[in-house]
Image (cartoon, rainbow, N blue to C red; front, top):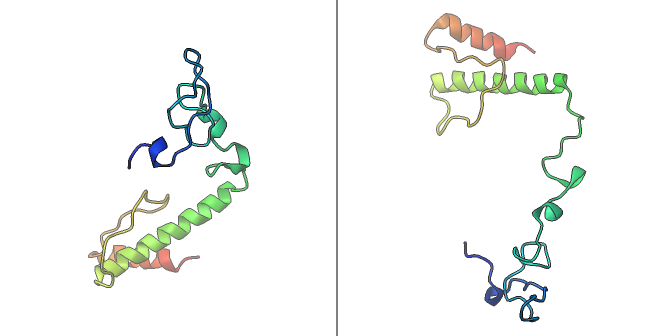
Amino acid sequence: MPLPSVLNGAKKCQVLTKRSKQSCKNPAAYGCKACRMHGAHKSRNVLQGANHPQYKNGTETKAVRAERSNASAKLLYIRDLGDNIDMFNGTKTRGRKPNGYRKLNMDDPAQRGLALLKVASS
């Protein structure tokens, strides 16, 4: 991805230089009126508080997290059972494994039954 350029339509820095008293020819920083050399502040452009996409407002309790983790573990056990009988085609699930999930050997009938019990339990 090319850097922003005034020639490619990026906004121009609106600051007058000290030495020549002419307008700066650098592109303005994203969301600012000035370039990086004339006082563009990232902290002023970043969304704050509830507007930020990673804002956590405390509405998620430990019980809700545990319930979601148990549901994810059940889905992984279903995936393991399906992989054992060649039901699924494609890549495995991505990401961190949920709490309460333990990889079981699906070739062992006792562990396969344990996986079925974990899926059936509510």
